Structures are given as structure tokens and as C-alpha cells.
Amino acid sequence: MKPLQLLRRARAALGPSGTCAAVFMIVVLVAAVAAPLLAPYNPNAEALLDSFAPPSASHLLGADGIGRDILSRLMFGARTSLLGPALVVSIALLVGIPMALAACWYGGFVDSVIARVFDIVYAMPGLLLAVLAVSLFGPGLVPAVAALSIAYIPFLARIVLAAARQQRVSPYVDALSVQGFGAVRITVRHILRNIAPVVLGQAAIAFGYALLDLAALSYLGLAVQAPTADWGVMVSDETALQQGYWLPILAPGVLIVLCVLSLTVIGARISGERPQPYLLRRARKSAVAAPALTGAAS
Amino acid sequence: MGRLVLHRLGGLLTTLMLSSVVIFGSLYLAPGSPEDVLFGSRQPTAAARAAVAHRLHLDQPLPVRYWDWLVGVLHGDLGTSMVTGQSVADRVGGHLGTSLLLVTLSMVIVIVIGTGLGAVSAMRPGAVDATANAVTSVSVTVPSFVAASLLISVFAVHLGWFPESGVGSGLGGELHGLFLPAVAMAIMNCGFLARISRNALREELQKEHVQTALVRGLPRWAVLRDHVFRNALPPIITAVALLTSGTFASTLIVETAFAVPGIGQLTISSVGQKDFPVVQAVSLLLVAAFVICNAASDLIQALIDPRLRTTRRTA
Image 1 (spheres, each protein chain N blue to C red):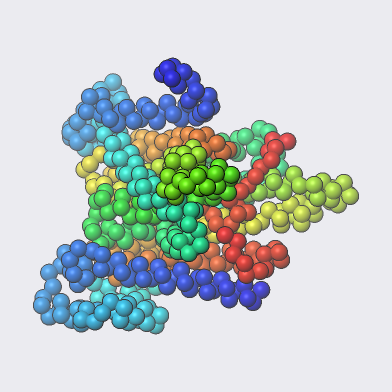
Image 2: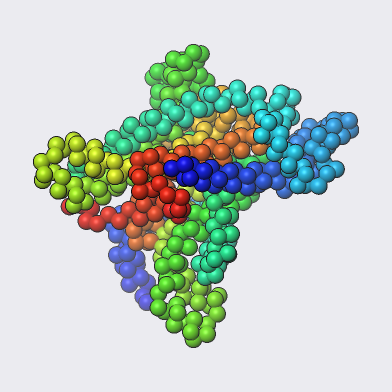
């Protein structure tokens, strides 16, 4: 397919709001990857004369208490702020998908053991697991990411499981089974392929919430450590807060909100659902999980 | 109903037991021996190290150690703080009241504003609904620490209406100090609850029995109360329970941001001081809060909806 055609199809699939969100995320990604080339300053270069400089031509978003350029810090901060959640979602998918597919395919005992494991992990908020991990292994991005990955496994795996169950009963699975294809081939090559949009969409939404959780941990000083540029670390700027300078805090805060909002919109569009709160899918009750809004605008 | 309560209690205990194994076992996952973890960065004397090793029964097999720990926890003995030497139960107990008040205050705000906003947007399709939808779409992505920083900046530093950190004395002073933290946690949750209650109410409003009731001439408010709202309650209650347990976890962030002396702040400062027994105790408490919230929501739903009074799992 030609690239232009591909773009047009992506735009149609994402819709107007999804396209805006996707463009925004691409801009953020490019800024993160090309930060050393694009950023006007070194993110950690201190210039005390510029302390709390207001936005100007030399500092587009102003400077913080010790004169570090906020725009440069935001660009470099995007690297740690996006890398962490990307790892969390990848690990959670790598572990969660095989577990969900096994539970779906074998059912019975395997299914109930895996469901029980998910129940326990689910009872511990991601934040709590991360705090436990940090108190054992010391602060840093690695323990925080590891703990959050574990916490995100049940969220994603439950979605994969529910979607895979619907496929499991369809005739093509039986047909393949009769032809003698094995469990791995059918589940991975056929079932997983058919549910890929849902999984990808939910992964995008989970990415947004992992970003929030990691930023919160960095804010608390438990994940990314202070001098490093990171959005969560930037929000925790005490001196700016106490002295009434709001831009050094507002800028990373708004950026976090916009990223999560974009990811939610994109995720909802890809998985082909009307946008709805992530929490709905965490709920166990079918009454909550399937809101089936028929003709909502009547 | 009695059977349902027993069944729920059973499930509650199972989850609590299994997660207590995880929380207990996590101590042995850490690099180095458990007493190293417990001492953290401090340099213990040989005698202190031996005392701790003896108190932890490190010469005994793991299941025995777990059993001793569990019996201790059930008797209210959560261990001893490695920093202050106080019993953990006393430290946590002293902070628990403030956190409970904070979570209650936040959830009251969430329930009033969330269901209110959801009801309004369910009843008024069109511009009102669209506006509410736009507001809630954004508010569900505002994390509590960003909200906390902005609220401090505006209402505490610039306007000076509320204290920047800490809480006053007496119930009035405490509520005054807890208001901003409660709002910071409520912003995200209000959006969630508004969307869930809007969807639930909208779905019920479209049912044919509601039309029939209105056509039969029943007063509008009676139809709304008995036919629409009551039927829409189950997903709302489930959401409130989930949000409440989530709010308990958010106290970790918000109490630190506002320097509120609750269990959240205690936990984060204990992590900084490598005071593992305190972290362990609070983790258990938070898991218990999650499990209790879930069980409570199931029981309340059974009270409201007689159809749910069976022991069958709805999962």
C-alpha cells in the first residue's frame, strides 16, 4: 500500500479527534527522540541569573528556580516519561497475552488458577506494589517499572481473555482444530490476530495510565531521581510552588494531562468502542463491563 | 442473604490470606538477607542483628515464620518500627484517623458531584450532555499530584484560603486542612463517576417500562426515583467501591503533597527511611481496604436488588 493511502486510512479510522490526538503524540515522540538536536539548552544547565525567568524569546516557556530552561527539560523529560510506560505496557503484554490465551484455550483448572492469580494482583494497586518494590530495592526507575508491569498484567490480560473467549466459540476455531492445527498456532496466528485491534487500543489506554502512575512515583521521588528531567519530577518543584511561580509546574502538568487524554482517545478509537472510562473495564461485574448503549443520542 | 454474606466473607478472607503471603514473602525477594533489608542503611551491632534474627525466627523454615507473623498480625502485633522503635500498630493507628477522614471527605465530594453531573447529563441530552462529556473527558486524565500542585498554587499560595500543608486541630481545623487534598483526589474520580452514572441512567431511561410508567401517569420524580435511579444503581455502586479503594491508594501521593499526617505520608516517609515493617503494615491495610470495599459493594447491591441475592459468582 502506498504511504499516502495508508495515512488516509489511518485518518479515517481515527476520526477527527483521534487524528488530532495522534498528531499530538507524534509531535511529543519526535521531540523526545530528537531532544538533543531540538532542545535549545542542556536540560541540566543551571543559570542562576535566569532564575524564574518569565517566558521570552530566549526561554520560550521560562526557566525554573535555578535557571534551567523549562522547554528543554520538558523535551528531555519526555524521554524518561514515555520510556517507562512503554516498558510497563510491553512487559505486561508479553506476560499477560500468553496467560490469557492459555486460560482461554485450556479452560477448566488452568483458567481458574490464572483467574485467582489475577484476583490477587488486582487487589494490590499498582502504586502500592511500586512502593513495596522501592522500599525493598531502593528508589529508581527499574523497580518502579517492574512493579507496575506486574500490576498492569491483570488489566490487559482480562481484556485479552474476554475478547479471546468470544473468538473461541466461533466456527473457524473448530474448523482449524479439526484440521489438526495445534493450540499455539490457532491462538497466536488466528485468535490473537483477530482480537489485535482491541488489544492494541487497550494497550494505548493502559500506556496513558502507566504514564500517570510513573509520573506520580517520580513526583514522590521514588522512580526517576530529582536532577534528571522528568515530567513527574518537574511537577514536584517545591520552590516554584512556595514562591508562587506556576509555569514550571503547570507546563509539565498540562503535558501529562494532554498525553493521557490523547492516548485515551486513540485507544478508544482503535479498539472500536465509544470512549469510556478505563475504570469500567477494571470492574468485574458484567453489568458494568458491558454498558451496551443502544442509540444513546435519542 | 446469610449465605451470600458467608460466601463473600470467604472470598474476602482468601484474597486477604493470599496477598498477606505476597506481602510477607516480598521481604525475602530483596537482595541480601532479611535483616539487612530491615536495618536498611543503618549499621547494626552484632547483638542487634542477632536479636532481630531471633525475633524473626530466621533459623526456622519459611512457613513457620509466616505462621508466626500472621498470628502476630491477627493479634494486632504488626512488628516494631526500625526507626523509632515504636510498635508499628501504634504508629499506623495514630495516622489512620486522618486518612479515613480524608478518604471519606473526598468520596462525599465525588458521590455528590459525580452522580449529580451524571444525572444532569443523562436527563439533558444535547448541549449540556456534550459539555459535561468534554469536562469529564479531561478531568479523568488529571492526576492527583498535578491537581494538588495547582490547588496549592492557587488556593493556598496566591489566595491564602487554605493551609499550604498540614492540618489544623479539632474537627473544624482538620476538615479545613483536608479540603484541598480531598478535592485533589476527587477531580479524577468525579469524572469517572459522572461518566459511569450518566451511562447507567441513560440506559435505564430508554427502557420501555419507564415509558410505560410515565404514560400511566405516575409522577415524573417517582418514576425517576423508583424506576430509573434504583435500577441504575448497581454499576454506580461498583464504581464507588472501586474509586474508594483507589482513593486509599491515592492518599500516598496527596498526603505527601499536602504534608497531611496520615498513613499515606507515613508510608512514603517510611520508604525514605527504609522502615520496612511500616510499609508492610500499610500495604496490608490498603489491600484490606480494597477487599472490604469490594465486599461491601456486593452486599449493598444485594440489599438493593433482590435478584442478586444468590451465592453465584457474577464474574
